[in-house]
View 1: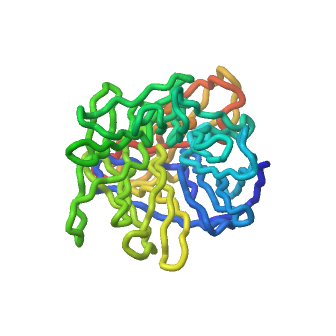
View 2 (view 1 turned 120 degrees about the horizontal axis):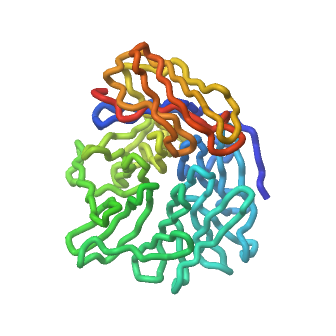
Length: 383
């Protein structure tokens, strides 16, 4: 059963997204939200601003999944196939097609990874040779990463029904788990070996980028980051468990994510997911209770005053005219793109330098793009 409730949390939904090549330049604006169920965990966010997580149903003393979509709070209480009355479920993320990934537990199935789509229902993740598995992330291609006991302390990637164990980054690797992947073939994970614990990005060419440790002011030890998620712009979301701080790692630098109303060391701001716009979803503690939040990257120096397309609805094969009116310092603008979902369809240009950016795209499907298109400004210069 799916229970839908229209709820109006304080969520900022924006049509312009900002990225920068200079990590130190990025700042974030925060919006908070609360949900009817007071005990909940935010797990992920996609480019449309859909937030997935799980809540504790006090009447059952069990966890159930929720999706928050533009103010509509939907509880998913439909049981997965083959489970009895007592089952728990946890979501881990959501892709741009609305597919949810996670795991459930029951006496009948044990720990079982899954994907879930409204309308398509549950699809079990079944790793050959395993007695349990857990799915941790899904990209827009439907590829899934997770962990199982098929090979001791090793993760897997599933693509088109084929399960591939993760390669070990070093000869002395004792455990290796992937927690995220993007559409460009990069995998985010963590491993332990004889020298310590590390967070890595496995690149599409098979090489590894190891994230550096961080020294936090006021703490004696350097911290290994706990991997959380990665987007298509190679921004990596990490969490430092002991300190309660979250960071985004980009261009070799860490940018701190902390809600201005967060309280108390060890429980400050827990970031759970990052989308391709650079928005981050998670929870923070204000000293009394937990709240959900969305952190949106903000860059000063220019503004998208207006963005529109004509016509607003087109048929297959027809041209769309895309416009964006952008004011401010154009030297900080690197690229203006027209995006459907997570796919860049065309680049806008401003040859006259009058602040009106224009592009054209031929519709490849019908109906047109009225409800699902956005104008993004990316690769900012000198922001």
